[in-house]
Image 1 (cartoon, rainbow over the protein chains, first blue to last red):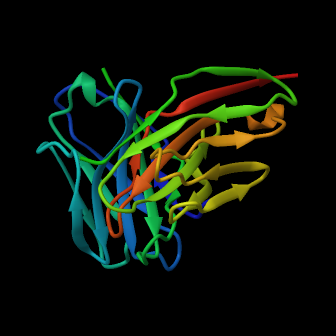
Image 2 (image 1 turned 135 degrees about the horizontal axis):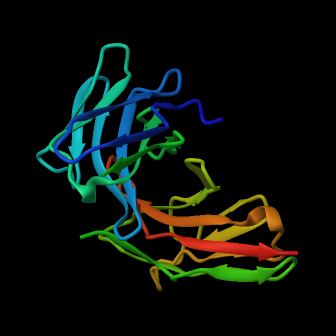
Length: 113
Length: 111
């Protein structure tokens, strides 16, 4: 058990809808990363937060947004969903110190129909 | 930009066979290099890492050596077990930046 909790485990929704994915980092970790895993693109970095502030952005679409709350949990919001957004979305956390390894949650599998 | 290239799978081996999964990287400067493993239905777990040239990372019988001259970080294990069946990801990071992953290599070990 990595200590990172993601909910829900599975999500099925229709095109055009909006969903929210939630992540609770390991106790004490200040930094949260979101990754998208799909068969064709592999693992793509979306966005990173550190102690409530956005730290880095990767290949995140404008239809997607995220935030980290004062209790350090994070939410990833996906809107105007398209079939191509179907993927596994992982959250990972780390204390935020240099070279500290990422601890991944088990992911949320999103299916857009 | 920075990138990681892994050998494509799947890799299919018999138990006790020798494993090599090739990984090469492109990056400026001196990145840290990692191998992560993903078991079915789970998130990624750190397997081993190396932070500077000629460092060898090792864990659970797996090893990888950071070779700057060949920009490689190949994963090896002398004798694989059925329980090693998983997807293996090579990754790099520059100080303070997010991990960049390769596309993953599926390993299937049969008894």
